[in-house]
Length: 189
Picture (cartoon, rainbow, N blue to C red):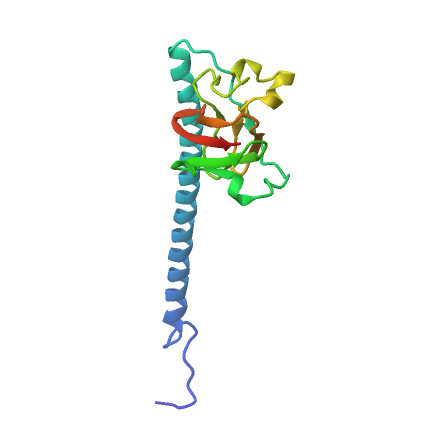
C-alpha cells in the first residue's frame, strides 16, 4: 500500500461517528419536546381541576337554596402581616393551622392562605356567619364589613386578611368556600 495515498472523504474511522452524533442529537431533541409537551398538559390539567372545585362548591350551596355572596378572589397583599407571628393562622392544603389560636381581647389575628385553593375565613355558622357578635354575611359589601369576623371574599394563595377581636369568648370559624375546614379563636380578657 502507498503511504502517500489519501482516503476519500466520508470514509475511514472518523466518518461514522458524525452520523451517530446527529442521530443522538435528534433523539435528544425529540425527548425534550415530549417532556415539554407533558409539562404543558400537566399544568393545564392542574389549573382546570382547581377552577372546577370553586364552582362545584358554589353549585352545591345553590342546590340547597342557600344564598351566598359570589366568591371574589383577592390578590396577595403587599402589607406586612401582624406584628407577632404567634397571631397568624395559615390556611394550608390540610385546613387552618393552628386549629385553635388564643389571643387577648383587642389583638389582631391574620389569616394567610398558603394553599393553591382560595379560602374565605368567616365566623361560624355556615352560611350566615353570625356567631361572632355583630357578624353577618349580609353585611359584606357594606360599611359594616370592616367590623365583622368575615373576610367577605376568597383569599388567593399568598393573600392575607386580618381581624381585631374585641369580644372575649371562644369563636368558631370556617372556610366559606369549603365548610369542612374550620378552626377556633379563643379571646382572653
